[in-house]
Length: 213
Ligand SMILES: Cc1cc2nc3c(=O)[nH]c(=O)nc-3n(C[C@H](O)[C@H](O)[C@H](O)COP(=O)(O)O)c2cc1C
Image (cartoon, rainbow, N blue to C red):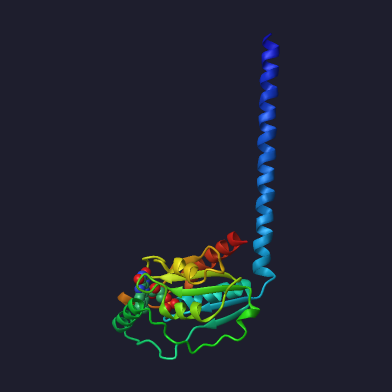
């Protein structure tokens, strides 16, 4: 009797183990399938990296991404550049945000239709998407494209920037964005993406890109 009980216990235990193993195997292949799909959207498609950067922190992240995924890279420039003075630009941006003014862009992108995947880089300004990025998203038809946002900020985070990208490009697929601490312009801390900081960000970008795949 004791032998029979032990034997049934062993049978139940091994069936449970077998079921657990098959489940984890099917999970793994599902993840692999997913990876193959997103990989395809990054590697086999034409990539454009568009960024806005005043003190070059977002530009540095754009360059790191460019090194890893290639494609074309374009900086957004304005017909009427913003003032250099921090307080003046804060006031102007705040005014543009409250009136919905879209500053005209000097940058023109030829045949945007040729791109499938668009990395979109910008700093947080007033906890919002900078007005020139709003101009870009309104000006170009990005429907059917994959948008991948990335951001630098003074440590207060992305605000509603990624959400605004999604809302302004409702016919695009917006993937998980990347964000890191950049300068603190208010305190006179401008460009920080060098040395250890740049290396750390390069590793974070690599991890993020791999997760996107
Ligand atoms: C007009 C203006 C508004 C800003 N507002 C914010 C903010 O709301 N939150 C934040 O964390 N950083 C804010 N910053 C700081 C920038 O996001 C940060 O310095 C960023 O790294 C700058 O990127 P860039 O070097 O590519 O221009 C602001 C900077 C400017 C010029």
